[in-house]
Amino acid sequence: MVAASPDSARSTTIPTVATSATTPSRRRGRSIGRVLTYLVLLTWAFICLFPIYWTFSTSIKDQVAVLRGPQYIPWTQFEPSSIGWDAVLAGDNREIFFRNARNSLVVALSSAGLSVVLGSLAGYGLTRFSYKFGPWRNRDISFWFLSQLILPPVAVAMPILILYNELNLLDTRIGLVLLYTVINLPIVIWIMRDQFASIPIELEQAALVDGASLFGAFARIVVPIAAPGMVAAFILSMILAWNEYFFATVLAASHAVTLPWMVAAQVSSQGAKWWAMAAVASAAILPLTLVGIFLERYIVRGLTAGAVK
Image (cartoon, rainbow, N blue to C red; front, side, top):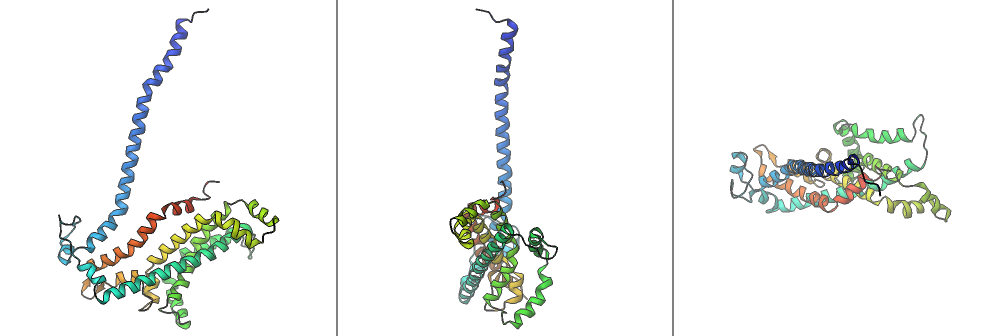
């Protein structure tokens, strides 16, 4: 048996000592990094959620508390009052509020559904077929769709107003549905274009070999795989249509009035009724908050699908 030399024994023990010495420091570094990450996330969550809390706290203040200054903690800094919610849910205001909420719901859901149907077909065509329109190809057509978002709404307000007057679409739900569908289509097309591009075309080719039609392969193979993206596009379109104010004010007067219009209607010649405005805004925020909480995983999955191929 050959005895190990002192130099070899020393060389084998040094890495063990170094490893044991650096392990606690690495753990402390990970702990500090984790704490800093949580602090950043908590700070960002506070920044995002504080406006919602401020809006709700304003809705339970009276005129004196609103004009007094920043007061955020009920029963400590101010006494809660129902004057804001009475201006929304009491008497005839209740019927007006629920009518406007029904208009917002119908317009948002209808335009979002129509946007997803048309945008999915357009996105599928841009990923599976080659188009040529003059010097334009698929990439140019896709960019043209996206470039429509750059156009300011005020630039097309007067032509749309004249067109809707000729077509008798002013102050109608169908008029808002068609307009919001056109507004949301570019975003839906780009979301669904990325979704379909991440799906292997061999799956559809196999279905076509088995005797399925082109639309059958799309409906039975592609749509189930791209469903998360469709849900994300639907939710995003619904949120944009629900919050839209400019065209709702220009094209609606009484029958098709939505909740954003009702928020702005709390301003009169006597001043702004901040408590009533905050109450209407809180009621309008609540459905979207519930959608975000319960469908958050579908939104994230749909928007990130296709990012890593």
